[in-house]
Length: 90
Image 1 (spheres, rainbow, N blue to C red):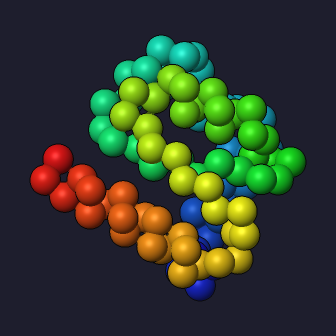
Image 2 (cartoon, rainbow, N blue to C red):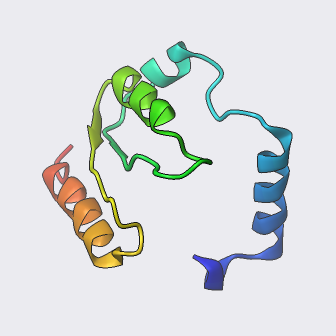
Image 3 (cartoon, rainbow, N blue to C red):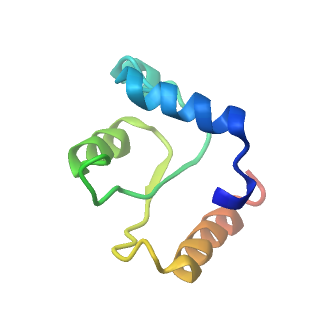
């Protein structure tokens, strides 16, 4: 991701983080997501477990995969691949 990050994306991401805004304003926004969704819960102060739990409870077609070691990219790729394979005909 870092190798392909362009300056405009970097600036936009930093502005969003600095604003303190949340990507979803209400439970209704989460409940309106109709596509299958894969949630990888956060495990750091910027991504508290409570937020992941709320998202998982409110997004109708949400699947959750626990990846305790965020440096294990092979497991991350495999989990995403499995999720996509299950939904290939969605």
